[in-house]
Image (cartoon, rainbow, N blue to C red; front, side, top):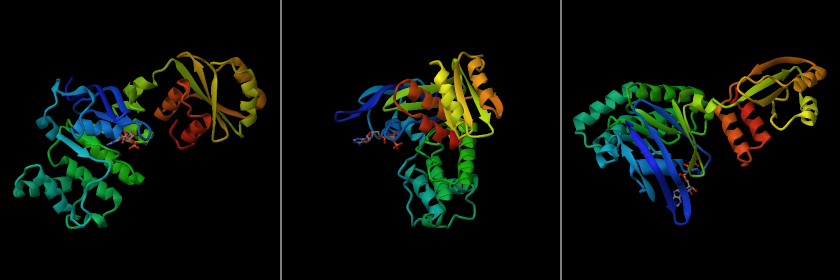
Length: 324
Ligand SMILES: Nc1ncnc2c1ncn2[C@@H]1O[C@H](COP(=O)(O)OP(=O)(O)OP(=O)(O)O)[C@@H](O)[C@H]1O
């Protein structure tokens, strides 16, 4: 496989097994989303990729060969704990990191000018980092990770704290890099963003890869999900339905008037008894199949493996717009 590949990576700190048998890869030009709860091991994985930590087990390859120090020089990294100097100007900051990459002063200045233009920071060359908005600070942070013309970008929560406009800008910059053949691995807790941007997603759950694949592959399940929308709160409908529902029907209530029902089978229809109750309940506005969002899929996986994202949590995800 071209690009980066982790093979059975494990890492412990003392007795604490933080990563266990982690396998996944990032090809050139591919955007891979790295998701998982707090403490799942995302940052640790990134540090292992960068060579800042050594694995307890397993190995990492680059274009099929064991990863070398030279290969690692072609990885741009945006750490979670941002590493900018508040009292340095934008241009000096980028020049500083370009010098650390081994460029001459002339080359470093040239690179800084190029990145300032590419990342939309023109006019802010002399602004101090501490005087920039968070969105612009993140742009500088991205610029810094790009000074070495990386073949792979490893970005630890590049979207955290950004407003929607800044998120769009950062997303555009990441897509631009991928279009130029740079592989991207980024972690995020914003699932709808991961879904929108990524070619592939790797889901880490307490140090193990729970899912890895294209979003469409993860969505390709043997179940059909329906949304029944009513003109009024559907609490009574859910209560009545729960009396007749057979085990393979699952319902989630969100925003009071929508009920989601999951039925086994790819081309399944809404069961007749559900329709009868809906008719009796009245004011059914629509019945539509819905594609599962990443958020719903993950909560589903958690439910089916008995690890307890509750229907309440699902409702939270739904109302936060993480399901369609
Ligand atoms: N140097 C260390 N020594 C001991 N434990 C560590 C060390 N680094 C990380 N850990 C532990 O490893 C686990 C995974 O941490 P990590 O930062 O990789 O998770 P994460 O998925 O990035 O979490 P978050 O989403 O909160 O950033 C945590 O329990 C953390 O306390």
